[in-house]
Image 1 (cartoon, rainbow, N blue to C red):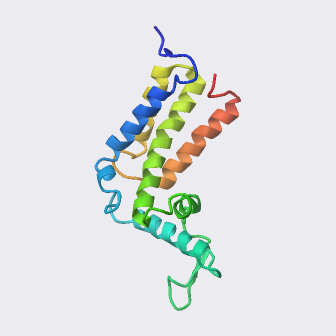
Image 2 (cartoon, rainbow, N blue to C red):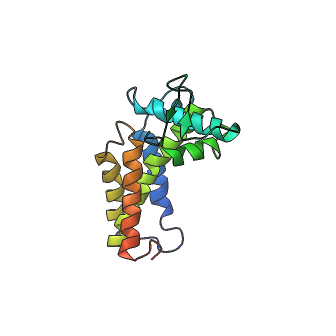
Image 3 (tube, helix red, strand yellow):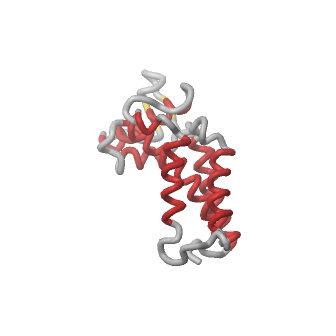
Length: 177
């Protein structure tokens, strides 16, 4: 028997639910502390929360721009053009995740990145093999290899997600087959 049981519209629901569960396991105990903790050692994770907060400020305050701030290096300010600002995640945190405080919104983005890293590898492996077992194995192995289980390297995960989805597009096949 192949790993493709369950043909039809919902054949990928089981693996997606598994990846959601594994996201919680891989990032444990983050799911219990979304409002009060940040994953990993102090470093970029604090910068990501600031980026999200800063995007909220710039969208809510006329005259502010996301790529310049006088909140840093006062009173002169500084350009954020070369800053690793994670603008896409910050826009999501400032708009879609607006009801959540910045730390909680950042943690939701981290969880989404971990989940999407597994889903994108599953999609890529499915696209190549058309085998559910191989795709699930690839999805479980891939996030484990890029440090997801121990620390959240969002920029690295995001580039991995984009790379996998680009490979699917380049291959010219469809995840829906």
